Length: 88
Image 1 (cartoon, rainbow, N blue to C red):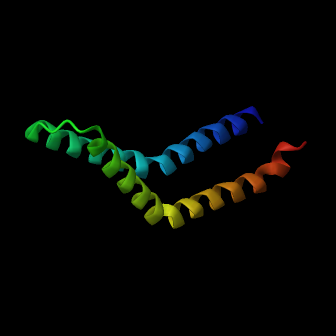
Image 2 (image 1 turned 60 degrees about the vertical axis):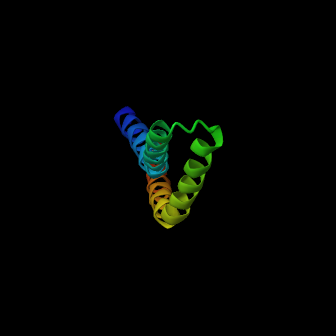
Image 3 (image 1 turned 90 degrees about the horizontal axis):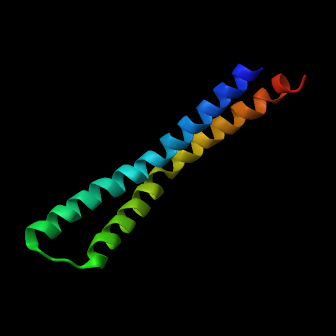
């Protein structure tokens, strides 16, 4: 019983990390690219670093939304199927 709950907690953290990765990686790569651009051109505009990251992350979230919804749906279905095993 306790091992199943621990496994469920680990699975929950894994799915949360998996769903967050596309946006986080996109923000990191765009931020790195903008930082390199700012360092080479010596342009220190604050909005230059935020706007491309926000736009890119929104685009990636929109593009990966069907996959994310499918993953969340599968995870929720598996949790609902596990409910009878926890009620004893």
